[in-house]
Length: 305
Image (cartoon, rainbow, N blue to C red; front, side, top):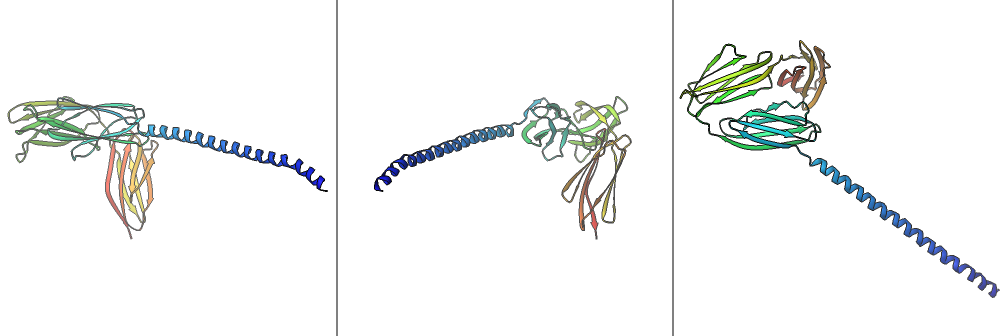
């Protein structure tokens, strides 16, 4: 019996060792696969993060140069440019038309005195870039004329002079001049808001100061119709009605901090009802027609009992 048992032990020994070796070999292979997989994941993730970081860091190339009494703004980008706005000091924003192009060039007037230009560029993905630059315009003894197009499609004629102004006068398309006398209480500034005639027009402005020095400036601008916007409350609902002779494009409104957009698809009349909450409701509305004419209602309040 002892002999038989010894013979069986000799047979089983090598088999057990082979199993152990096979187990460790499989474990090493699995560990290697895991390590390789983690390495590949790290490489892929790292590449992705670098790629995303590179995309996030893409900003428009903005070049702002002064040309005498004007500022030349040149913008180029790898993405479509959705919006470009600017303002001087604490004044209202002015919009530069982009048409989703990759490059924009615009010349704007430099106001008299010490001024800070604030420029904002937003691309098609909503990425915003801001630029700030300071300028000083001492003038050459002549009046300084600044022509601005407002959101309401009007022209703001702003004229300044260090000593004082006598008057300004302006004409559309070489027609009759309209004269605006300086205010005796502030001879250094004339600030006038004028309507733009429909269609393509040329505005010519002349300014004369107390030393009889004259400055002239011209601007090509298109006058467009603005849509009619009517708002009323019917019980617990707000009724928005917009009309245009040619076609409506879009209506934006903000109700109690929530933004809404209605694409009008070329309709001449758009009617929309919006449910109101109990209590006070705050509303801002902007209606735009196909020509780019804009009508706005700001700081409206509706109360539901």
